[in-house]
Amino acid sequence: MKPVLDRLQRPLGAVRISVTDRCNLRCRYCMPEDDYAWLPRASLLSFEEVTRLTGVFAQLGAGKIRLTGGEPLLRRDLDRLIAMVKVLTGVREVALTTNGLLLAPLAAALKAAGLDRITISLDTLHAERMTAFAKSSRHADVVAGIDAALAAGFTGIKLNTVVVRGYNDDEIVPIARFARSRGIEPRFIEYMDVGGATRWRSEEVFSRGEVIAVLERAFGPAESVSRIGDRHAPAERVRFGDGLVAGVIASTTAPFCRDCDRARVTADGTLFVCLYAEHGVDLREPLRQGATDAELAGLVTRTWEARTDRGAEARVAMGDRGILVPLEGLRADPRREMHVRGG
Ligand code: SAM
Ligand code: SF4
Ligand code: SF4
Image (cartoon, rainbow, N blue to C red):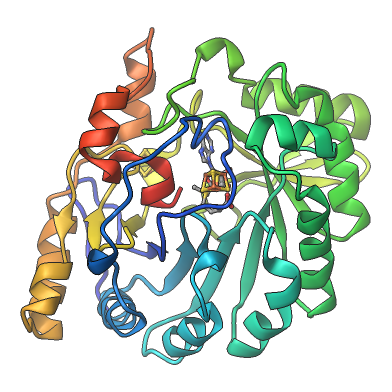
């Protein structure tokens, strides 16, 4: 199949589908405010509608599917959706990004439904830090979720940690050890100035270079084994002297837009071709008005072929930068929020 290419010759290869804009955490880098404008319930896609759209993307070459949110496990019966998506023609992999809070009781059912891979977010090993930083005292549930995923037989689990200076930069080595002791690959993510990160300050960004330096002191010299086999992967993988392999995602200081093959669909069926894009394209209305798969595929193809976005690189080029979208802008259009776009 000929890939659908954007204006910079980047193929459409993956799609992140948000299944809800709700979340049971309030991570300070993502949802720091006290209240939010939510997507209207009636606008949320049903499982059947998500499956239709996923099928369209997969037929166009976007066979790597990642379910996300908000917190995707808040969506009841998610295992049913996974089973529906998994059998679609062209789907190569179904993955999930979750904060892990609800994972322990669900891990076995997700595995049985055919989920291929899980990425779990964990920013601290200290329960009290999570209470302060994410407004939840359920740290033990996240750890139980990680262990349940292992017990359910998931392999290739990844642990995502957003490193924020002054909050958890002293936990890079302990988190790496925690992950390794369970056979899990840690991934350290730079704090991004995405929509919704209304407390973002450049001083709080702990850079890729700093993360690697900290890991080198504990685990020996770093060697990039980067993106071998998958240059579109967002994480650079680094092997350290004693064998530790960690991912580093330098979206703020050294972004990877030139290789970005990911589309995003919000829970209300809006297509975004970049995490930073101001506007999206409504797929829900045509879907509900009876558009055929071919018509939906045409809309997605035209949107992707017009794509020139390099949002994170454009932010770097700005030099001195503040927050991306002011609060009023987020209130007026919640689709600009990271927790609506799905990360
Ligand atoms: N709720 C799920 C979770 O946290 O894993 C899935 C959705 S969340 C939006 C997806 C990813 O976005 C998480 O790994 C989270 O750490 C990351 N994220 C959110 N805000 C971020 C920010 N300002 N900078 C960097 N990563 C961010
Ligand atoms: Fe945290 Fe994910 Fe919820 Fe954002 S969507 S607040 S990153 S758990
Ligand atoms: Fe892709 Fe946009 Fe992120 Fe760059 S900023 S990697 S183009 S989603």
